[in-house]
Length: 625
Image (cartoon, rainbow, N blue to C red; front, top):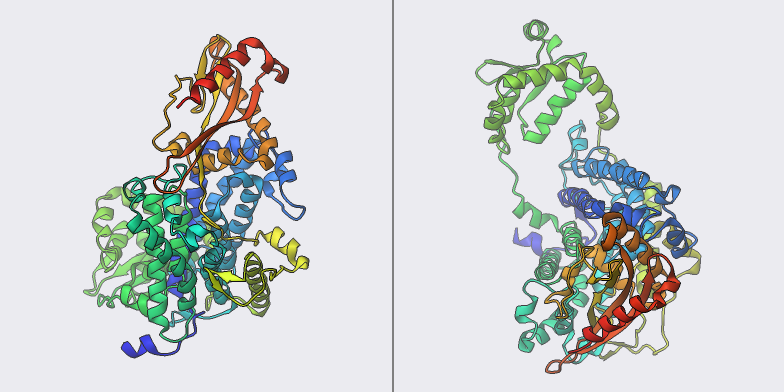
Protein backbone atom coordinates (compact mmCIF):
# COMPACT_ATOMS: atom_id res chain seq x y z
CA UNK A 1 0.00 0.00 0.00
CA UNK A 2 2.82 2.42 0.90
CA UNK A 3 4.42 1.95 -2.54
CA UNK A 4 1.17 3.04 -4.18
CA UNK A 5 1.31 6.31 -2.27
CA UNK A 6 4.76 7.22 -3.55
CA UNK A 7 4.83 6.07 -7.16
CA UNK A 8 4.27 8.44 -10.09
CA UNK A 9 0.63 9.03 -10.97
CA UNK A 10 -1.25 10.95 -13.61
CA UNK A 11 -2.84 13.87 -11.68
CA UNK A 12 -5.69 14.07 -14.17
CA UNK A 13 -6.97 10.56 -13.47
CA UNK A 14 -10.28 10.56 -11.63
CA UNK A 15 -12.25 7.86 -9.86
CA UNK A 16 -15.62 6.76 -11.21
CA UNK A 17 -17.01 6.60 -7.66
CA UNK A 18 -15.96 10.21 -7.07
CA UNK A 19 -17.70 11.19 -10.31
CA UNK A 20 -20.82 9.38 -9.10
CA UNK A 21 -20.72 11.42 -5.87
CA UNK A 22 -20.29 14.55 -8.00
CA UNK A 23 -23.38 13.62 -10.01
CA UNK A 24 -25.50 12.94 -6.93
CA UNK A 25 -24.33 16.18 -5.32
CA UNK A 26 -25.00 18.22 -8.46
CA UNK A 27 -28.57 16.94 -8.61
CA UNK A 28 -29.13 17.67 -4.92
CA UNK A 29 -27.66 21.19 -5.16
CA UNK A 30 -29.74 21.99 -8.23
CA UNK A 31 -32.87 20.98 -6.32
CA UNK A 32 -31.77 23.03 -3.29
CA UNK A 33 -31.13 26.08 -5.48
CA UNK A 34 -34.56 25.76 -7.10
CA UNK A 35 -36.18 25.42 -3.67
CA UNK A 36 -34.48 28.63 -2.48
CA UNK A 37 -35.61 30.54 -5.57
CA UNK A 38 -39.14 29.12 -5.80
CA UNK A 39 -40.89 31.31 -3.15
CA UNK A 40 -39.76 34.46 -4.99
CA UNK A 41 -40.33 33.15 -8.51
CA UNK A 42 -42.73 35.97 -9.60
CA UNK A 43 -40.35 38.55 -8.14
CA UNK A 44 -37.19 37.36 -9.85
CA UNK A 45 -38.42 35.77 -13.08
CA UNK A 46 -41.56 37.54 -14.33
CA UNK A 47 -42.22 40.83 -16.09
CA UNK A 48 -44.21 41.91 -13.03
CA UNK A 49 -41.18 41.49 -10.78
CA UNK A 50 -38.12 43.59 -10.04
CA UNK A 51 -36.27 42.60 -13.23
CA UNK A 52 -38.51 42.32 -16.32
CA UNK A 53 -37.27 40.66 -19.50
CA UNK A 54 -36.44 43.97 -21.16
CA UNK A 55 -34.03 44.81 -18.32
CA UNK A 56 -32.60 41.28 -18.40
CA UNK A 57 -31.91 41.37 -22.14
CA UNK A 58 -30.36 44.83 -21.88
CA UNK A 59 -28.17 43.75 -18.95
CA UNK A 60 -26.70 40.74 -20.77
CA UNK A 61 -24.29 40.79 -23.68
CA UNK A 62 -25.31 40.09 -27.27
CA UNK A 63 -24.23 36.45 -27.07
CA UNK A 64 -26.14 35.63 -23.89
CA UNK A 65 -29.48 33.84 -24.15
CA UNK A 66 -32.19 32.42 -21.90
CA UNK A 67 -35.25 30.23 -22.31
CA UNK A 68 -36.90 32.44 -19.71
CA UNK A 69 -36.93 35.26 -22.27
CA UNK A 70 -39.52 33.43 -24.37
CA UNK A 71 -42.34 34.49 -22.05
CA UNK A 72 -42.64 36.93 -19.17
CA UNK A 73 -45.38 35.20 -17.18
CA UNK A 74 -44.77 33.47 -13.87
CA UNK A 75 -46.43 30.33 -15.24
CA UNK A 76 -43.74 29.94 -17.90
CA UNK A 77 -40.94 30.47 -15.37
CA UNK A 78 -42.57 27.98 -13.04
CA UNK A 79 -42.89 25.45 -15.86
CA UNK A 80 -39.18 25.73 -16.67
CA UNK A 81 -38.26 25.36 -13.01
CA UNK A 82 -40.41 22.22 -12.69
CA UNK A 83 -38.70 20.79 -15.79
CA UNK A 84 -35.33 21.71 -14.26
CA UNK A 85 -36.27 19.91 -11.04
CA UNK A 86 -37.25 16.82 -13.02
CA UNK A 87 -33.94 16.62 -14.87
CA UNK A 88 -32.01 17.40 -11.67
CA UNK A 89 -33.73 14.38 -10.10
CA UNK A 90 -32.82 12.26 -13.12
CA UNK A 91 -29.23 13.44 -12.77
CA UNK A 92 -29.13 12.60 -9.08
CA UNK A 93 -30.39 9.05 -9.63
CA UNK A 94 -28.40 8.55 -12.85
CA UNK A 95 -31.24 8.19 -15.35
CA UNK A 96 -30.13 9.05 -18.90
CA UNK A 97 -27.27 10.80 -17.17
CA UNK A 98 -25.61 12.55 -20.09
CA UNK A 99 -28.90 13.89 -21.46
CA UNK A 100 -29.92 14.98 -17.95
CA UNK A 101 -26.55 16.75 -17.56
CA UNK A 102 -26.85 18.63 -20.83
CA UNK A 103 -30.47 19.70 -20.31
CA UNK A 104 -29.78 20.68 -16.68
CA UNK A 105 -26.88 22.82 -17.89
CA UNK A 106 -29.09 24.54 -20.48
CA UNK A 107 -31.81 25.25 -17.92
CA UNK A 108 -29.38 26.49 -15.26
CA UNK A 109 -27.60 28.74 -17.76
CA UNK A 110 -30.97 30.17 -18.78
CA UNK A 111 -31.83 30.78 -15.13
CA UNK A 112 -28.54 32.58 -14.50
CA UNK A 113 -28.94 34.82 -17.54
CA UNK A 114 -32.52 35.70 -16.59
CA UNK A 115 -31.48 37.63 -13.46
CA UNK A 116 -27.70 38.06 -13.09
CA UNK A 117 -28.15 40.46 -10.16
CA UNK A 118 -28.78 37.44 -7.92
CA UNK A 119 -25.63 35.53 -8.77
CA UNK A 120 -22.49 34.83 -6.75
CA UNK A 121 -19.35 32.76 -7.26
CA UNK A 122 -21.01 29.54 -6.12
CA UNK A 123 -23.55 29.82 -8.93
CA UNK A 124 -20.78 30.14 -11.48
CA UNK A 125 -18.92 27.12 -10.08
CA UNK A 126 -22.09 25.01 -10.02
CA UNK A 127 -22.73 25.81 -13.67
CA UNK A 128 -19.14 24.99 -14.63
CA UNK A 129 -19.17 21.66 -12.79
CA UNK A 130 -22.36 20.80 -14.63
CA UNK A 131 -20.79 21.84 -17.93
CA UNK A 132 -17.67 19.67 -17.57
CA UNK A 133 -19.88 16.85 -16.30
CA UNK A 134 -21.42 16.67 -19.77
CA UNK A 135 -18.07 15.27 -21.00
CA UNK A 136 -17.66 12.74 -18.17
CA UNK A 137 -19.20 9.32 -17.40
CA UNK A 138 -21.04 10.58 -14.31
CA UNK A 139 -23.46 7.67 -14.39
CA UNK A 140 -21.04 4.76 -14.68
CA UNK A 141 -21.29 4.06 -10.94
CA UNK A 142 -24.14 4.25 -8.41
CA UNK A 143 -26.85 4.95 -10.98
CA UNK A 144 -29.85 3.43 -12.64
CA UNK A 145 -27.97 3.69 -15.92
CA UNK A 146 -25.21 1.49 -14.50
CA UNK A 147 -27.75 -1.19 -13.55
CA UNK A 148 -28.64 -1.57 -17.25
CA UNK A 149 -25.04 -2.25 -18.39
CA UNK A 150 -24.41 -5.87 -19.32
CA UNK A 151 -20.59 -5.65 -19.25
CA UNK A 152 -19.54 -3.06 -16.64
CA UNK A 153 -15.90 -1.99 -16.45
CA UNK A 154 -14.16 -3.15 -13.29
CA UNK A 155 -11.46 -0.46 -13.09
CA UNK A 156 -12.58 2.65 -11.19
CA UNK A 157 -9.87 4.86 -12.64
CA UNK A 158 -10.81 7.16 -15.50
CA UNK A 159 -8.60 9.42 -17.60
CA UNK A 160 -9.72 11.64 -20.47
CA UNK A 161 -9.59 15.19 -21.73
CA UNK A 162 -12.77 15.83 -19.76
CA UNK A 163 -11.21 14.60 -16.51
CA UNK A 164 -8.22 16.90 -17.07
CA UNK A 165 -10.56 19.83 -17.70
CA UNK A 166 -12.49 19.15 -14.49
CA UNK A 167 -9.30 18.92 -12.38
CA UNK A 168 -7.99 22.21 -13.81
CA UNK A 169 -11.34 23.89 -13.23
CA UNK A 170 -11.60 22.81 -9.59
CA UNK A 171 -8.05 23.86 -8.73
CA UNK A 172 -8.25 27.12 -10.71
CA UNK A 173 -10.85 28.42 -8.26
CA UNK A 174 -8.24 28.49 -5.49
CA UNK A 175 -5.05 29.15 -7.42
CA UNK A 176 -6.25 32.21 -9.30
CA UNK A 177 -8.10 33.43 -6.23
CA UNK A 178 -4.70 33.63 -4.50
CA UNK A 179 -3.13 35.50 -7.41
CA UNK A 180 -5.95 38.04 -7.32
CA UNK A 181 -5.46 38.71 -3.57
CA UNK A 182 -2.95 41.55 -3.94
CA UNK A 183 -4.08 43.96 -1.22
CA UNK A 184 -1.98 44.83 1.81
CA UNK A 185 -4.57 43.06 3.94
CA UNK A 186 -3.32 39.78 2.46
CA UNK A 187 0.29 40.66 1.71
CA UNK A 188 1.48 42.83 4.63
CA UNK A 189 -1.02 43.42 7.43
CA UNK A 190 -2.58 39.98 7.66
CA UNK A 191 -5.94 41.62 8.42
CA UNK A 192 -7.96 40.05 5.58
CA UNK A 193 -9.80 37.59 7.82
CA UNK A 194 -10.42 40.36 10.35
CA UNK A 195 -12.17 42.47 7.71
CA UNK A 196 -14.04 39.53 6.19
CA UNK A 197 -15.51 38.50 9.54
CA UNK A 198 -16.51 42.10 10.35
CA UNK A 199 -18.70 42.34 7.28
CA UNK A 200 -22.07 41.96 8.99
CA UNK A 201 -23.77 41.31 5.67
CA UNK A 202 -22.24 37.85 5.58
CA UNK A 203 -20.69 37.22 9.01
CA UNK A 204 -22.64 35.01 11.39
CA UNK A 205 -22.31 32.00 13.66
CA UNK A 206 -18.83 31.66 15.16
CA UNK A 207 -17.44 34.80 13.49
CA UNK A 208 -18.30 37.19 16.33
CA UNK A 209 -16.41 35.08 18.88
CA UNK A 210 -12.96 35.13 17.31
CA UNK A 211 -12.76 37.85 14.67
CA UNK A 212 -10.96 40.25 17.06
CA UNK A 213 -8.35 37.69 18.13
CA UNK A 214 -5.57 39.16 16.00
CA UNK A 215 -3.02 36.61 17.23
CA UNK A 216 -5.22 34.04 15.44
CA UNK A 217 -6.62 35.90 12.43
CA UNK A 218 -3.25 37.21 11.21
CA UNK A 219 -1.47 33.84 10.86
CA UNK A 220 -4.65 32.29 9.47
CA UNK A 221 -4.73 34.99 6.79
CA UNK A 222 -1.27 33.98 5.65
CA UNK A 223 -2.19 30.29 5.86
CA UNK A 224 -5.27 30.77 3.65
CA UNK A 225 -3.31 32.67 0.99
CA UNK A 226 -0.45 30.17 0.83
CA UNK A 227 -2.87 27.23 0.85
CA UNK A 228 -4.75 28.67 -2.13
CA UNK A 229 -1.50 29.18 -4.05
CA UNK A 230 0.44 26.04 -3.14
CA UNK A 231 -2.44 23.60 -2.59
CA UNK A 232 -3.37 23.35 -6.31
CA UNK A 233 0.29 22.88 -7.27
CA UNK A 234 0.66 20.03 -4.79
CA UNK A 235 -2.57 18.47 -6.05
CA UNK A 236 -1.10 18.41 -9.57
CA UNK A 237 2.19 16.82 -8.57
CA UNK A 238 2.68 13.37 -10.18
CA UNK A 239 5.24 12.54 -7.47
CA UNK A 240 3.81 11.69 -4.03
CA UNK A 241 0.49 12.23 -5.79
CA UNK A 242 -1.77 10.44 -3.32
CA UNK A 243 -0.36 12.18 -0.26
CA UNK A 244 -0.25 15.64 -1.82
CA UNK A 245 -3.69 15.36 -3.46
CA UNK A 246 -5.29 14.01 -0.28
CA UNK A 247 -3.69 16.78 1.80
CA UNK A 248 -4.82 19.53 -0.59
CA UNK A 249 -8.36 18.22 -0.84
CA UNK A 250 -8.70 17.77 2.93
CA UNK A 251 -7.22 21.22 3.65
CA UNK A 252 -9.55 22.94 1.19
CA UNK A 253 -12.57 21.05 2.54
CA UNK A 254 -11.67 22.21 6.07
CA UNK A 255 -11.44 25.75 4.72
CA UNK A 256 -14.92 25.48 3.19
CA UNK A 257 -16.33 24.05 6.43
CA UNK A 258 -14.91 27.12 8.16
CA UNK A 259 -16.86 29.29 5.71
CA UNK A 260 -20.07 27.39 6.50
CA UNK A 261 -19.81 28.14 10.22
CA UNK A 262 -18.66 31.76 9.90
CA UNK A 263 -20.00 33.29 6.69
CA UNK A 264 -23.47 33.47 5.20
CA UNK A 265 -22.57 32.90 1.52
CA UNK A 266 -25.31 30.57 0.36
CA UNK A 267 -24.48 27.34 -1.43
CA UNK A 268 -20.93 28.36 -2.40
CA UNK A 269 -19.02 26.28 0.20
CA UNK A 270 -21.20 23.23 -0.47
CA UNK A 271 -20.52 23.49 -4.21
CA UNK A 272 -16.80 23.86 -3.49
CA UNK A 273 -16.73 20.80 -1.21
CA UNK A 274 -18.52 18.79 -3.88
CA UNK A 275 -15.94 19.86 -6.49
CA UNK A 276 -13.13 18.73 -4.20
CA UNK A 277 -14.72 15.34 -3.56
CA UNK A 278 -14.76 14.82 -7.34
CA UNK A 279 -10.94 14.90 -7.55
CA UNK A 280 -10.27 12.57 -4.60
CA UNK A 281 -7.64 9.95 -5.62
CA UNK A 282 -8.61 6.31 -6.07
CA UNK A 283 -6.31 5.02 -3.32
CA UNK A 284 -8.00 7.21 -0.73
CA UNK A 285 -11.45 6.19 -1.92
CA UNK A 286 -10.44 2.54 -1.64
CA UNK A 287 -9.67 3.16 2.03
CA UNK A 288 -12.78 5.22 2.69
CA UNK A 289 -14.98 3.01 0.52
CA UNK A 290 -13.85 -0.56 1.18
CA UNK A 291 -15.19 -3.26 -1.07
CA UNK A 292 -18.20 -4.92 0.46
CA UNK A 293 -17.96 -8.62 1.10
CA UNK A 294 -19.79 -10.63 -1.46
CA UNK A 295 -23.17 -11.81 -0.30
CA UNK A 296 -22.96 -15.59 0.02
CA UNK A 297 -26.71 -15.98 -0.22
CA UNK A 298 -27.61 -17.51 -3.59
CA UNK A 299 -31.04 -16.58 -4.89
CA UNK A 300 -32.70 -17.09 -8.25
CA UNK A 301 -35.03 -14.49 -9.73
CA UNK A 302 -37.42 -15.53 -12.52
CA UNK A 303 -39.25 -12.92 -14.59
CA UNK A 304 -41.89 -12.96 -17.30
CA UNK A 305 -40.09 -13.44 -20.60
CA UNK A 306 -42.55 -11.14 -22.38
CA UNK A 307 -42.08 -8.30 -19.88
CA UNK A 308 -38.97 -6.18 -20.51
CA UNK A 309 -39.83 -4.02 -17.51
CA UNK A 310 -39.83 -7.13 -15.28
CA UNK A 311 -36.37 -8.14 -16.47
CA UNK A 312 -34.96 -4.66 -15.91
CA UNK A 313 -36.46 -4.57 -12.43
CA UNK A 314 -34.61 -7.79 -11.54
CA UNK A 315 -31.30 -6.42 -12.78
CA UNK A 316 -31.93 -3.13 -10.98
CA UNK A 317 -32.55 -4.94 -7.69
CA UNK A 318 -29.42 -7.03 -8.16
CA UNK A 319 -27.29 -3.93 -8.78
CA UNK A 320 -28.81 -1.62 -6.18
CA UNK A 321 -28.96 -4.19 -3.40
CA UNK A 322 -25.50 -5.59 -4.05
CA UNK A 323 -26.40 -9.21 -4.85
CA UNK A 324 -23.61 -10.48 -7.12
CA UNK A 325 -24.57 -14.12 -6.55
CA UNK A 326 -28.15 -13.63 -7.65
CA UNK A 327 -29.09 -15.26 -10.95
CA UNK A 328 -31.75 -13.87 -13.29
CA UNK A 329 -33.62 -16.01 -15.79
CA UNK A 330 -36.83 -15.97 -17.81
CA UNK A 331 -39.41 -18.17 -16.06
CA UNK A 332 -40.66 -19.64 -19.34
CA UNK A 333 -37.22 -21.14 -19.95
CA UNK A 334 -37.62 -23.35 -16.89
CA UNK A 335 -40.11 -26.20 -17.15
CA UNK A 336 -40.97 -26.07 -13.43
CA UNK A 337 -41.01 -22.30 -12.81
CA UNK A 338 -42.89 -21.32 -15.98
CA UNK A 339 -46.23 -22.85 -14.91
CA UNK A 340 -45.91 -21.25 -11.46
CA UNK A 341 -45.51 -17.79 -13.01
CA UNK A 342 -48.51 -18.33 -15.30
CA UNK A 343 -50.70 -19.72 -12.52
CA UNK A 344 -49.81 -17.12 -9.86
CA UNK A 345 -49.33 -14.21 -12.25
CA UNK A 346 -46.19 -13.32 -10.30
CA UNK A 347 -42.46 -13.30 -10.57
CA UNK A 348 -40.79 -16.14 -8.66
CA UNK A 349 -37.81 -16.00 -6.30
CA UNK A 350 -36.12 -19.23 -5.17
CA UNK A 351 -33.95 -19.05 -2.04
CA UNK A 352 -30.94 -21.20 -1.25
CA UNK A 353 -33.17 -23.78 0.45
CA UNK A 354 -35.44 -24.14 -2.58
CA UNK A 355 -38.38 -22.23 -1.11
CA UNK A 356 -40.52 -20.17 -3.45
CA UNK A 357 -41.38 -16.50 -2.85
CA UNK A 358 -44.08 -14.66 -4.80
CA UNK A 359 -45.32 -11.08 -5.32
CA UNK A 360 -44.57 -8.61 -2.52
CA UNK A 361 -43.15 -11.30 -0.21
CA UNK A 362 -40.55 -12.07 -2.88
CA UNK A 363 -39.49 -8.42 -2.96
CA UNK A 364 -39.21 -8.33 0.83
CA UNK A 365 -37.05 -11.46 0.80
CA UNK A 366 -34.72 -10.11 -1.89
CA UNK A 367 -34.24 -6.86 0.07
CA UNK A 368 -33.50 -8.78 3.28
CA UNK A 369 -30.77 -10.69 1.45
CA UNK A 370 -28.88 -7.41 0.88
CA UNK A 371 -25.95 -6.52 3.12
CA UNK A 372 -26.45 -2.85 2.27
CA UNK A 373 -30.18 -2.43 2.70
CA UNK A 374 -31.33 -5.56 4.50
CA UNK A 375 -32.69 -3.40 7.31
CA UNK A 376 -35.28 -2.05 4.87
CA UNK A 377 -36.81 -5.50 4.58
CA UNK A 378 -38.56 -5.14 7.93
CA UNK A 379 -40.14 -1.87 6.81
CA UNK A 380 -41.37 -3.40 3.56
CA UNK A 381 -42.67 -6.40 5.43
CA UNK A 382 -44.95 -4.20 7.53
CA UNK A 383 -46.84 -3.17 4.41
CA UNK A 384 -48.47 -6.60 4.48
CA UNK A 385 -51.30 -7.30 2.04
CA UNK A 386 -51.21 -3.74 0.75
CA UNK A 387 -47.91 -4.71 -0.82
CA UNK A 388 -49.64 -7.32 -2.98
CA UNK A 389 -52.18 -4.69 -4.03
CA UNK A 390 -49.33 -2.43 -5.17
CA UNK A 391 -47.61 -5.33 -6.90
CA UNK A 392 -50.78 -6.28 -8.79
CA UNK A 393 -51.35 -2.69 -9.87
CA UNK A 394 -47.80 -2.47 -11.23
CA UNK A 395 -48.29 -5.85 -12.93
CA UNK A 396 -51.48 -4.65 -14.62
CA UNK A 397 -49.60 -1.64 -16.02
CA UNK A 398 -46.32 -3.36 -16.85
CA UNK A 399 -46.70 -2.65 -20.55
CA UNK A 400 -46.81 1.10 -19.89
CA UNK A 401 -43.89 0.80 -17.48
CA UNK A 402 -42.02 -1.14 -20.15
CA UNK A 403 -42.51 1.66 -22.64
CA UNK A 404 -41.30 4.21 -20.09
CA UNK A 405 -38.20 2.24 -19.11
CA UNK A 406 -37.38 1.67 -22.78
CA UNK A 407 -36.87 5.43 -22.99
CA UNK A 408 -35.35 6.14 -19.58
CA UNK A 409 -33.41 2.93 -18.92
CA UNK A 410 -32.18 1.38 -22.18
CA UNK A 411 -29.96 -1.68 -22.20
CA UNK A 412 -26.29 -0.98 -22.90
CA UNK A 413 -23.48 -3.41 -23.56
CA UNK A 414 -20.92 -1.08 -21.95
CA UNK A 415 -21.36 2.36 -20.44
CA UNK A 416 -20.88 5.04 -23.14
CA UNK A 417 -18.03 7.51 -22.83
CA UNK A 418 -17.07 10.66 -24.69
CA UNK A 419 -15.83 10.02 -28.20
CA UNK A 420 -13.09 11.73 -30.15
CA UNK A 421 -15.26 14.68 -31.22
CA UNK A 422 -16.44 15.46 -27.71
CA UNK A 423 -12.90 15.06 -26.37
CA UNK A 424 -11.56 17.54 -28.92
CA UNK A 425 -14.29 20.02 -28.02
CA UNK A 426 -13.60 19.57 -24.30
CA UNK A 427 -9.86 20.04 -24.87
CA UNK A 428 -10.31 23.24 -26.86
CA UNK A 429 -12.71 24.69 -24.30
CA UNK A 430 -10.43 23.70 -21.41
CA UNK A 431 -7.56 25.63 -23.02
CA UNK A 432 -9.81 28.68 -23.50
CA UNK A 433 -11.01 28.54 -19.90
CA UNK A 434 -7.46 28.25 -18.54
CA UNK A 435 -6.41 31.12 -20.81
CA UNK A 436 -9.31 33.19 -19.51
CA UNK A 437 -8.29 32.52 -15.90
CA UNK A 438 -4.70 33.52 -16.61
CA UNK A 439 -5.95 36.71 -18.27
CA UNK A 440 -8.06 37.53 -15.19
CA UNK A 441 -4.88 38.22 -13.17
CA UNK A 442 -4.07 41.93 -13.34
CA UNK A 443 -0.64 41.98 -11.69
CA UNK A 444 2.18 39.60 -12.50
CA UNK A 445 5.18 41.71 -11.47
CA UNK A 446 4.84 40.91 -7.78
CA UNK A 447 3.11 37.94 -6.13
CA UNK A 448 2.59 38.30 -2.39
CA UNK A 449 5.36 40.87 -2.24
CA UNK A 450 7.83 38.73 -4.19
CA UNK A 451 9.34 40.02 -7.43
CA UNK A 452 8.59 37.71 -10.37
CA UNK A 453 10.86 39.47 -12.86
CA UNK A 454 7.93 40.46 -15.04
CA UNK A 455 7.24 44.10 -15.83
CA UNK A 456 4.45 46.02 -14.16
CA UNK A 457 2.76 46.37 -17.54
CA UNK A 458 2.82 42.62 -18.24
CA UNK A 459 -0.66 41.24 -18.81
CA UNK A 460 -2.13 38.28 -20.65
CA UNK A 461 -5.10 39.17 -22.82
CA UNK A 462 -7.83 36.61 -23.54
CA UNK A 463 -8.45 35.84 -27.21
CA UNK A 464 -11.09 38.28 -28.38
CA UNK A 465 -12.26 35.79 -30.99
CA UNK A 466 -13.39 33.52 -28.15
CA UNK A 467 -15.59 36.14 -26.45
CA UNK A 468 -18.78 34.78 -28.07
CA UNK A 469 -17.94 31.29 -26.77
CA UNK A 470 -17.28 32.58 -23.25
CA UNK A 471 -20.57 34.47 -23.23
CA UNK A 472 -22.73 31.92 -25.04
CA UNK A 473 -21.74 29.10 -22.68
CA UNK A 474 -21.12 31.41 -19.71
CA UNK A 475 -17.60 30.05 -19.27
CA UNK A 476 -16.07 33.41 -18.37
CA UNK A 477 -14.95 33.47 -14.74
CA UNK A 478 -13.03 35.56 -12.24
CA UNK A 479 -12.36 34.02 -8.83
CA UNK A 480 -11.98 37.25 -6.86
CA UNK A 481 -13.48 36.12 -3.56
CA UNK A 482 -12.22 38.63 -0.95
CA UNK A 483 -9.86 39.94 -3.62
CA UNK A 484 -7.88 42.09 -4.05
CA UNK A 485 -8.95 42.71 -0.43
CA UNK A 486 -12.04 41.93 1.65
CA UNK A 487 -14.99 44.29 1.42
CA UNK A 488 -14.64 47.04 4.03
CA UNK A 489 -17.85 48.95 3.36
CA UNK A 490 -20.50 47.21 5.40
CA UNK A 491 -23.94 48.53 6.26
CA UNK A 492 -27.65 48.03 6.21
CA UNK A 493 -30.74 49.32 4.43
CA UNK A 494 -33.33 51.74 5.71
CA UNK A 495 -36.69 52.02 3.96
CA UNK A 496 -38.94 54.56 5.71
CA UNK A 497 -42.37 54.73 4.09
CA UNK A 498 -45.36 57.01 4.45
CA UNK A 499 -48.76 55.31 4.44
CA UNK A 500 -51.93 56.95 3.13
CA UNK A 501 -53.11 57.35 6.71
CA UNK A 502 -50.06 59.52 7.42
CA UNK A 503 -48.12 57.00 9.51
CA UNK A 504 -44.38 56.74 9.08
CA UNK A 505 -43.19 53.12 9.22
CA UNK A 506 -40.26 50.97 8.26
CA UNK A 507 -41.19 48.76 5.30
CA UNK A 508 -37.96 46.81 4.89
CA UNK A 509 -39.51 43.52 5.97
CA UNK A 510 -42.64 44.02 3.82
CA UNK A 511 -44.67 44.49 7.01
CA UNK A 512 -45.45 47.89 8.64
CA UNK A 513 -43.59 48.12 11.93
CA UNK A 514 -41.99 50.73 14.08
CA UNK A 515 -38.47 51.51 13.07
CA UNK A 516 -35.60 50.78 15.43
CA UNK A 517 -32.73 53.24 15.10
CA UNK A 518 -30.22 50.78 16.51
CA UNK A 519 -27.91 48.92 14.22
CA UNK A 520 -28.99 45.28 13.71
CA UNK A 521 -26.64 42.85 15.47
CA UNK A 522 -26.37 41.03 12.15
CA UNK A 523 -27.57 43.13 9.24
CA UNK A 524 -27.78 40.00 7.10
CA UNK A 525 -31.01 39.08 8.91
CA UNK A 526 -32.72 41.87 6.96
CA UNK A 527 -32.97 39.56 3.99
CA UNK A 528 -35.14 36.50 3.47
CA UNK A 529 -32.20 34.65 1.91
CA UNK A 530 -28.83 35.30 0.31
CA UNK A 531 -30.48 35.96 -3.07
CA UNK A 532 -32.24 38.98 -1.58
CA UNK A 533 -29.01 40.12 0.03
CA UNK A 534 -27.18 39.95 -3.29
CA UNK A 535 -29.91 41.82 -5.10
CA UNK A 536 -30.50 44.62 -2.59
CA UNK A 537 -26.83 45.27 -1.87
CA UNK A 538 -26.14 45.46 -5.61
CA UNK A 539 -28.72 48.22 -5.89
CA UNK A 540 -26.26 50.42 -3.97
CA UNK A 541 -23.78 50.63 -6.85
CA UNK A 542 -24.13 53.44 -9.36
CA UNK A 543 -24.00 51.04 -12.30
CA UNK A 544 -27.21 49.41 -11.02
CA UNK A 545 -28.96 52.65 -10.05
CA UNK A 546 -31.37 52.41 -12.99
CA UNK A 547 -32.73 49.16 -11.54
CA UNK A 548 -33.84 50.94 -8.36
CA UNK A 549 -36.94 52.35 -10.04
CA UNK A 550 -38.06 48.86 -11.04
CA UNK A 551 -37.63 47.76 -7.44
CA UNK A 552 -39.66 50.77 -6.25
CA UNK A 553 -42.47 50.01 -8.68
CA UNK A 554 -42.54 46.36 -7.62
CA UNK A 555 -42.50 47.22 -3.91
CA UNK A 556 -45.45 49.59 -4.25
CA UNK A 557 -47.49 47.10 -6.27
CA UNK A 558 -46.75 44.25 -3.91
CA UNK A 559 -47.39 46.25 -0.75
CA UNK A 560 -50.64 47.81 -1.92
CA UNK A 561 -51.96 44.49 -3.22
CA UNK A 562 -51.66 43.13 0.33
CA UNK A 563 -52.76 46.12 2.43
CA UNK A 564 -55.91 48.23 2.18
CA UNK A 565 -57.18 51.71 3.14
CA UNK A 566 -54.90 53.65 5.50
CA UNK A 567 -52.10 51.08 5.29
CA UNK A 568 -51.60 51.62 1.56
CA UNK A 569 -48.06 52.77 0.78
CA UNK A 570 -47.85 56.34 -0.47
CA UNK A 571 -44.11 56.89 -0.81
CA UNK A 572 -40.81 55.66 0.54
CA UNK A 573 -37.13 56.45 0.55
CA UNK A 574 -34.33 53.95 0.20
CA UNK A 575 -31.22 54.67 2.28
CA UNK A 576 -27.99 52.82 2.67
CA UNK A 577 -26.34 53.24 6.05
CA UNK A 578 -22.71 52.68 5.15
CA UNK A 579 -20.40 51.49 7.88
CA UNK A 580 -16.74 51.52 6.94
CA UNK A 581 -14.78 48.91 8.87
CA UNK A 582 -11.69 50.54 10.33
CA UNK A 583 -8.41 48.81 11.26
CA UNK A 584 -8.28 46.97 14.59
CA UNK A 585 -8.68 49.33 17.55
CA UNK A 586 -10.64 52.03 15.68
CA UNK A 587 -14.37 52.74 15.70
CA UNK A 588 -16.22 52.29 12.40
CA UNK A 589 -17.29 55.35 10.43
CA UNK A 590 -21.01 55.52 9.61
CA UNK A 591 -22.64 57.58 6.83
CA UNK A 592 -26.20 57.65 5.52
CA UNK A 593 -26.59 57.68 1.73
CA UNK A 594 -29.89 58.34 -0.04
CA UNK A 595 -30.29 55.86 -2.87
CA UNK A 596 -33.80 56.68 -4.06
CA UNK A 597 -36.93 58.72 -3.38
CA UNK A 598 -40.02 57.01 -4.74
CA UNK A 599 -43.71 57.87 -4.83
CA UNK A 600 -46.07 55.02 -5.60
CA UNK A 601 -48.46 57.05 -7.78
CA UNK A 602 -46.44 59.92 -9.23
CA UNK A 603 -42.74 60.69 -8.89
CA UNK A 604 -43.51 64.42 -8.78
CA UNK A 605 -45.52 63.94 -5.58
CA UNK A 606 -42.34 63.06 -3.70
CA UNK A 607 -41.91 66.81 -3.22
CA UNK A 608 -45.26 67.14 -1.46
CA UNK A 609 -44.74 68.63 1.96
CA UNK A 610 -46.37 65.88 4.02
CA UNK A 611 -44.22 63.19 2.42
CA UNK A 612 -41.01 65.16 2.13
CA UNK A 613 -41.00 66.43 5.70
CA UNK A 614 -41.69 63.05 7.24
CA UNK A 615 -38.96 61.30 5.29
CA UNK A 616 -36.39 64.05 5.84
CA UNK A 617 -37.15 63.99 9.56
CA UNK A 618 -36.76 60.25 9.53
CA UNK A 619 -33.28 60.24 8.04
CA UNK A 620 -32.10 62.99 10.39
CA UNK A 621 -33.08 60.95 13.38
CA UNK A 622 -31.67 57.75 11.93
CA UNK A 623 -28.32 59.41 11.32
CA UNK A 624 -27.95 60.39 14.95
CA UNK A 625 -25.39 58.32 16.88
